[in-house]
Length: 385
Image (cartoon, rainbow, N blue to C red; front, side):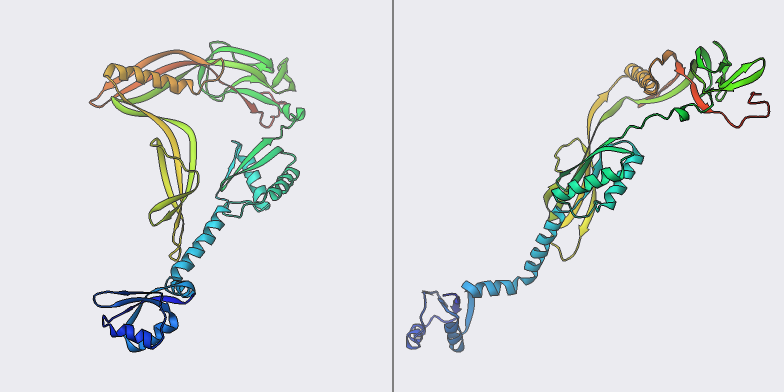
């Protein structure tokens, strides 16, 4: 029963039935067509019939079907097997490592430690027990910079959560002799010294680099001690901001969300491996990672940057107000606590067909005092000229 075949005999003569009976050829079904017979019998009977009549196999059954199918489709079957093996390999491969810190130096240290423990992009994912062992190894080898680490697997991505070890302040290093100098030109509005000698006063105009509070302690025109100068110096400083505002524009707001989408392309159809995200509010860039002629698929990485946007159509008056807002925002983004805008004044306002150009002058109350380590002392025991 395992070697049955369906055959087509190119004859419609009824003598063919007599031939089957005379030669004791058994069959399961017999269909007569206008110009032929369709017959299901075993493979040995097919050989007998084919010696007398023009015969063609229409279909195999049982083992013969499997053997014939494999023979005809061997290259496709090999490709499917290789593809499945690669698919399994890819789903057990690390494609991305995210470390949740803005400290680039610490991030590089952790990446180096991960590589030392055989965790890197395009390497095999680790088992649960292996990750615990690796985590302990990294903690032990980075005791001076690392308090805690967690390795979380999500699809083909490892998310590394860490806590940086906080070092105690070395008081000896905190006492390096230094001055307070001006970080930019300005007109002093407030100055106080907690340590050191004040060299400037309110309403003094200073230039960038001028010493405002010296680390030299002077008595009777002689330097009796050198300390770390400490104090606050606020001054009026000046900025000019130039802004172009189109009357029709789109404002984009970055959501700071990024998605890495890994997918297979099989005959034009996408099959997601990791990170699928469907939205019109994305900017995408695609990269081909794997493409071999003997594979049935291609592997892509698609980076998606998610944003929100709003369209604006404004009048010339609204454009001028928007220009003032943007210029002010540009200044405020750089201000710290206790710093503020004193006043602003429009220097230039040019109206064009599609946009407006505005130039705004700002007076800003800002902390300009920065610490600067004292350079080599001169022969007069450190007295500045």
